[in-house]
Length: 89
Picture 1 (cartoon, rainbow, N blue to C red):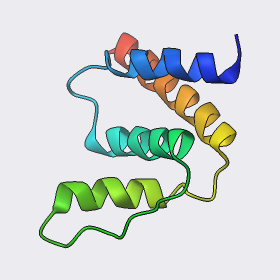
Picture 2: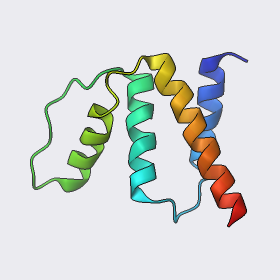
Picture 3: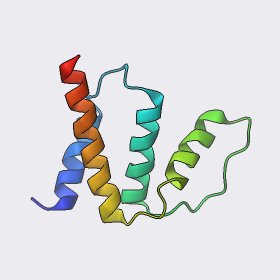
């Protein structure tokens, strides 16, 4: 399988992560997913009254220097780590 297929498979697996997955980890996954599928951030940062969207934007902005391929690889690695942690608990 190619990287894109692996990435899509792990994007589906990410949807089955436990409810108690931390917001920090969810934001990391969000940023990597957006970078892998869209590329660098193209929108302006949301205002301070929209904390949720602002946190998501910040998570994406933090990884915008990564190539789409690197973001896909990092996303897959992170989902694997979270799955292993969930299985161990």
